[in-house]
Image 1 (cartoon, rainbow, N blue to C red):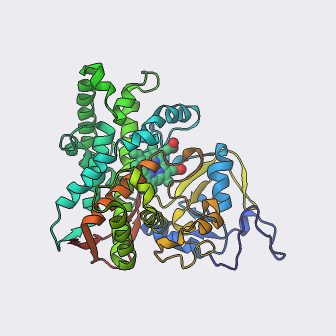
Image 2: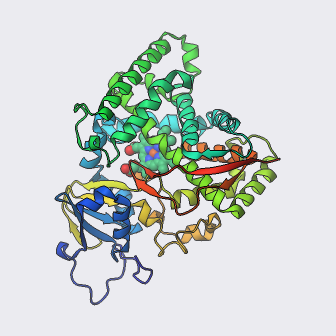
Image 3: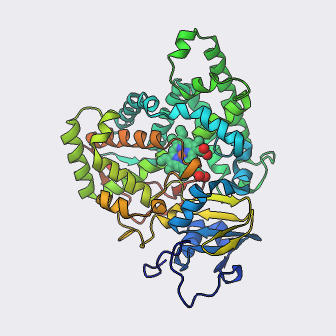
Length: 459
Ligand code: HEM
């Protein structure tokens, strides 16, 4: 997508030689094989096409990439009522989390969102701050000066500890046995390169068997925890701030046992790898940009002076905020958003049929040079107030937008910033893995090789 080709959202200019828009004239990328084998290459090929709505045909299904911020805003926000999450997501995730917030639609979704929202109120998540900082220390305690650290597994351990505490308020050793295998089996099952991704869960592939067994173990652990909770004195129960306690306080018609399992699994799937990847990419970028790392550490030293960060301190750490914002721009773990219109719609002048698969890729929009100078460069300092006020609203949407925006956004940003502030005060990261990162589009945007940095204790 080139800069001269100005915004062609609904409000954009129509050039005199533009033929009347019709489906047949949309660039259509026919390439089932490359989409399945190399989704990232496929997305990048779409990014090269000079249009804001790009049709494609994969396995006989027509879909469209939508890459203009005004159109993104229309789909996610203004006309959100005309779109659903769609069949693709229901097919791949429905059996695990179909009754969870991520996939429900209509009135049921609204009721659940309202019921769950209190778990993510600012005051509530602020109470998780101490645990987040403590777990960040635990992670850093496991490293020795000069050690090479494989970042993603380390960050996964951190985010799993945080979720174990904040979702269930149990010692993570107790749930690790079922959670770790379940999350890794699910990652495998949803990986488009595996056979299991295309087979129903009952087909006895090794991955499917692992998913079924680890899920049963997770549900059994959950049953035990629920039974204990229900046996607790009321004053103990009321003093708990975890998400499970909130779910258990809802009446049976809002939250039956099956739905409760789907909701917890939704939070685990949505909140575990996304934040672990964000932190992995942040350390990778800081290690490879020593000036940015020095500036971050200078801000932390000046503001915290070696003390542990609290949620309130985060307001005083603007560069830390910019580092996170820029990391999520370059490497959005949720690399795309999917929608399906429920009625005929017009996008960018093109008629789109109901049920067409819409791909609304953060990966392309966040690196579009119409909105970002030198879009592939890591430049936290680009996020000035002036830049942000000129930026179209939906040129940046790592957490989605509109009514279905990420309910865990504030939680995730706080969790990531507390970990960055805690660990960056203790260690300097030296690059071992250098750019370019080899990435793959799995359920999230993931590195294909270990991302490694050498950590040096700061004195
Ligand atoms: C950096 C970390 C995260 C990223 C990048 C991220 C990204 C997103 C995005 C893009 C969506 C919207 C999807 C759509 O519109 O189809 C979403 C929804 C959601 N996220 Fe997150 N997320 C993160 C962390 C979390 C955490 C920590 C939790 C919970 C503990 C969470 C729970 C959810 C849920 C439940 C939804 C569905 C909301 C609804 O449909 O009402 N996410 N997330």
